[in-house]
Length: 554
Image: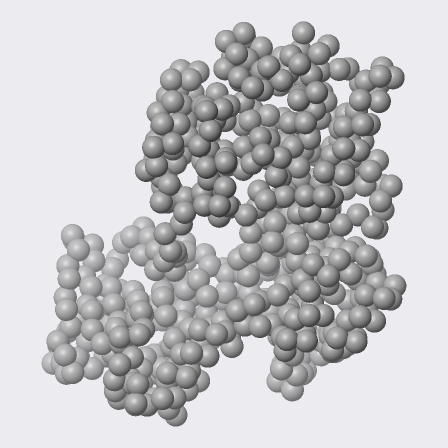
């Protein structure tokens, strides 16, 4: 990403997907930052945000358990070109003083701060974490550049970190941009002859152990250009980096370092082995930023014996370069979903989909599965969430994807009731939910990741109250056989509109006490709210304000 992408007019384009939450530009910017720079999923990003007034200078809180830090987030958007001085940073430092110790946090909880901020402190157990020694750090996020006064302030205040225009653009990953360092660099190949591997006509790889002393002399470390395609630059004082520094300081372990370390990946325009030197031209590190940055900071402890395995790839094809970048930075462990992709239950469902509605719908059971042209694709991950919310009445767990293919796999999928017709029926129901959620007045709630699954559980219970509807939900195939799918879905849309009117009323009644981020993860709170909505709907039907399901589908 170019830094100019964060000028005000350009930033508005980036923030368009978040406008529907109607939380203001600064909070939308924070939301974008959490998803694109901190790489949180949408639910986790929403959970970190405090988007109400009287938040005491705290726009959000994110706990990084890996670094044992409590990050206090503050985001500002400036329309006119200017710089970031020390004034807003001093304000953030003042906000941090509210969390100096357990007593300070308790005073904040007992005071007049907005209930959403208090809920955020409670959900994250901030008081308890501070007692355990977690460090409180302020994160200031802005679309302008830090000036001299601001830089001097953060040099003297290690509790404050600034993500200005340049820092954000450096950490944002845009693999369409090649980036890197122009020029030549030489690796010593006298220690061992590199292994040379030619892949087709597009790439040549050299694999060899290189000295850490050499790596820290590469250009582009300080300004980040060397790592312009890396998913992360140095992540700071993480447990992994602590262990890495410990290994570097223990010089007796240097000769064993290649046994412990995964190595670094370097892409270059040209690589040439000559006279025991490997020359690389126009290069970029796509995996290994943390290691090289740690070596740089620990340069006094390096010895010639400390080597890491380097894979140096000469490549000119941008498409293959992007694939290498993505895969180098996404070495994910095998997930439970992957292990279930060949499970007979999943294979059976996938094959069954081919026989329903002329193969109009397709079930994806494996990541990267190629979609058949002209079909509507439903992932088994989404199917699992729908079944969890509708059948098992556990919408509060739908953000915990690991449960779908691990803890609750048998309960969700391994049942006679789970057929292709059932999954398609739930998919169509969710389409109606997505269509009607914009009618929720409080926009952050309408866009919250768990809201749609909560409404799915409400629909499930409402349908169970009508004998005709219950017959169809028990055997959705009958709905298709009777040719009533469209009519049934229109009925669901109608009752959803009534339910959402009542939901808006409930939210207004609760006012500032409504903590949807906490309540939608609480089985007890969800059950209570669902019961109130069901009672309201039944009253509306009795009073003639809403049509009954029976009337809508008969």
